[in-house]
Amino acid sequence: MAQRREFLKAIGALAAAPVMAHAPRAFAQGRPVRAATLTAAPGRQQIVPPEYPATDIWAFNGTAPGPELRFRQGERVRIAVKNSLPQDTTVHWHGVRLPNAMDGVPHVTQPPIAPGGEFVYEFDLPDAGTFWYHPHEKSHEQVGRGLYGAFVVAERDPPPVDRDVTWVLSDFRLTPQAAHAADWDSMFDMSHDGRVGNTVAVNGKFTARDGAFEVTRGERVRLRLVNAAVARIFALRFRDHAPVVIANDGQPVTPHPPENGLIVLGPGMRADLILDCRGERGKRYEVADEFYPRSRERLLWLAYRDAPAIESESRDAPVALKPNPLAEPDVARATRHEILFEGGAMSPRMMGRGMAGMGAGGHPMLWFINDRAVPDDHRAHEPMLDLKLGGHYVFAMRNDTAWYHPIHLHGLAFRIVARNGQPTRWREWADTALMAPRERVDIAFVADAPGTWMFHCHVLAHQHAGMMTTIRVA
Ligand code: C2O
Ligand code: CU
Image (cartoon, rainbow, N blue to C red; front, top):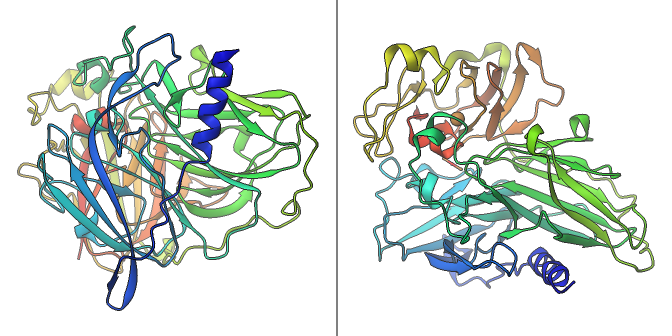
């Protein structure tokens, strides 16, 4: 019982995580700038139940996830990142459309931030939505140790809800002493499905046993889901509830129930849901994770307070979000590029041709995008494609591997227009497209941001073993 209360408290407190609401401290070109500081440093956190030790983590401002950064659409932000880690780092603002120099990619958009160093990121926020931040240096290890956080940009005029809550989903691979397993460069992880952990966490706490998210009958919750895991894919089912998806990867979508009732999020992906709490008072309902069929797990309980239903004023309000100012790709006149993903375990390519040299850490390169594997330090790397600024493009991506890959493009949002040759139902905007084994996915976008942008798999062990490249827009 004590434990149960402990977890209720933990999740309750995290759900109400303090938001960064600094007063403007500075002005840029006559406009106020909202300032924040993130310090990346070793820390310690009780991830698993209290009968186990706390875990030595790396974290932003002491906790994993780090602080939820909350801003408003149209604001300009200035975020100082201090590195108190024993190795280089950077911060990438995943999904935020910003100038290339602020994108946080070591060796491509900036030099890495050395231990003891600092880098100040400053950019405008053109889009509202649910984004996130994480290092881009050795990210398979740094994200895995706990360096990530939510980055929320509120609409100027958000749909009314009773609560706006973020669940940062992740997992950890822990030893029986609750320490990170030390096999960061595991060949098996790199060549199979990445470093899938054994301890799923919501907002940095293991919740599967008796963790609960408390709700009151009658309330309407906007739930922002962020998959910050280095490899784990989530497929969430809300038992006896009917969540409505209103945004993917921060970008508004026609409100719709999730396909087959499952919210599927590959690493890096986000979803915004409207959850109307219509369960019975005093009862609890499971939120299940059904992605890995052989290890179906509970994520947590939705626990209804034993309290009278509230009359939500927002209940009948429309939930559709206003679109962000994105340039609409014209698929008919777009230039088409075929992008082929190969490699990994059970691939003829790996068996037949062997590996493609070594990465910066001396590990083999196992994955290929259009025939090339790029090491972390981008040594001798040339962009895969040169795109014309303002041009319209379709990337016809083909996953010729036995594995899932969430493919992320920096700096630009794209529409997912077709899967296996069939038009998609919602033509959703995204910054990360999950490709199933052997699947073909067509994405379309306008290359309206100049610079050299990363294009890579967000299973971070795959990225580490070569599954990344860049495109250059000029
Ligand atoms: Cu979220 Cu290039 O990464
Ligand atoms: Cu991958």
